[in-house]
Image 1 (cartoon, helix red, strand yellow):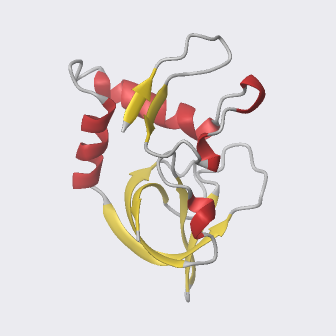
Image 2 (cartoon, rainbow, N blue to C red):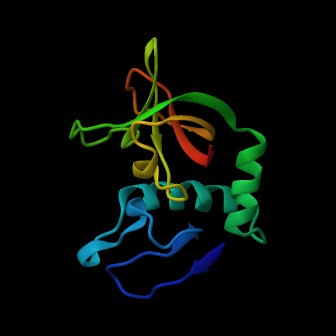
Length: 137
């Protein structure tokens, strides 16, 4: 795992990156990825009470409270402003959750049945719970 600070006003600190080729982590044309900002806020909020801790400590703690979910990953195409994830987890019963991750390239698992370990995140009043994917099989 690596952490780097970028001082350009058009880029942000990358919280955690285990794969430089993640499509969800791309910083194109000086833009900032929405999901990186979302996770950065969660980490900074937690860090206020844990000032000596690193991002990896935060995600290790998240894993302890994470849920195990199974289903098929599908891209969420709707262009809503405050959508709680850019992917969906579906089962034979229908959609069960919104998903996003800055650590896992969910696009690589699109259309595949997976088992995930995920931390709950706000769903912004959408119909299904939202999760940050920490691990995927």
